[in-house]
Image (cartoon, rainbow, N blue to C red; front, side, top):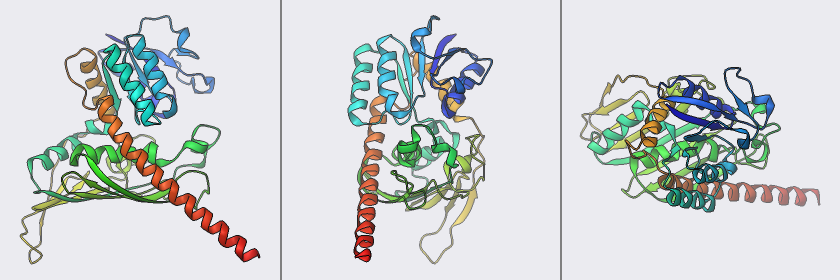
Amino acid sequence: MIQILVLGAGLIGARHAKSVQQHPACTLVGVVEPNPALHSDPSISYYTDVADVAHPVQAAIIATPTHLHAEHGIFAAQRGWAILVEKPISESLEQAKALSDAVAKTGVASLVGHHRRYHTHVQHLKHMIAAGDIGDPITATVIWAVRKPDGYFQENWRTTGGSPVMINLVHDVDILRYILGDVTEIRALGSAHIRNADRTESGAALMRFDNGAVAAISFADTAPSPWGFEAGTGENPHIAASHQDMMWITGTAGSVAFPSMTTWSGAQDWSESPKPKRLELPVTNPLAKQLDHFVEVVTRKSTPLISVFDAAETLKVTLQLEAQLSDEINYVKARINKENQHAVR
C-alpha cells in the first residue's frame, strides 16, 4: 500500500483525496489544508501544516494553488516523496525549472496532473491521428465556454489570479500538444468586459504546430454553454454534463468530432458528402486512471505519461497565450480610458 499525502483541500484536492481512499493500492495519510473551513470530510485526517504529519509518507499529491506548486513539490522531493503535481506545473518557467532541477537531483518519481490524457476518448483520438485515420491533420477547432459562479472568485486566490487561461485553457493546450505535437507559433486576443476584473475572462487563440496543422480555441468563463471538455465528457462532477462535441479536427482524408468520436470520411472532394461513423468507447474516470498510472510510476513499473519536463512545455505555451491576452486587454482598457477622457473634455 502506497502511503499518499494530499496537499490542498480545494475542488481538485478533495477529488484526489477521495480517489486515493477508493484505490486498492493506496492509503490516504491525510490532507494538509491550512483553512479549517475546508476540513469537511469526517473520514479524512486533516493537518493545518505539513510539519504536523507524523505518519510515514511515500508520495504526495500537490493540489495547492498554482503559485505554490513548485515550492510544495520541491519540499516533497527533498523528503524523498514521489510527487504528482497538479496542472499547471507552476506559475512561471523559473519555478518549473526549479522543480525540474529538484526532481532530477533527488531522483524521485514524478508526474504532472494533466489528467485528461488518461481519458479513453483522448487516448483513442491520439491513436487515430498518429495512425493517419483522417490523413494528415490540417485544422483543430476547440470551444470551452462556461459561466463560473461569482462565488468561485470571492475571497480566495482566484480574485486576482483566476484567469481561465492558466486554470482551464492549459488543459486544452496540453491535449492539442499531446495529439498534434509541438507548438511553433501562437496568436491571441482577449477580453475582460463582463466582470471587469484584472484578469482575462474570454478570448480566442491561434496555434501553429510543427507538423503544419493550425488550431483555433474560443474560450470564456462568463458564458453558459454546452461546449467544453468537462461538459462534453461529463468527467467533472462540478460541471453539468451536456455530452456535446467541443473539438473538431480535420485532415486530408476526413475529420473527427470529440468527444462523440464521430468520424467523417469517404469523400475525395467537395462533390461528395463525407459519411459519418460514431465509435462507441467505454467511459472511464480519467482521475482514477491517472492514479493507477501514478502508482506504476511510484513503483517504477512505468515512465510518466507527462513528466515535469513535458509539462513545462505546455506551461510555456500557456504563459505566452496569457501574456498576449493580458497585453491586448490592457491596450483596450487604455484606449477606452483615453476615449472617455477625451469625451469629458
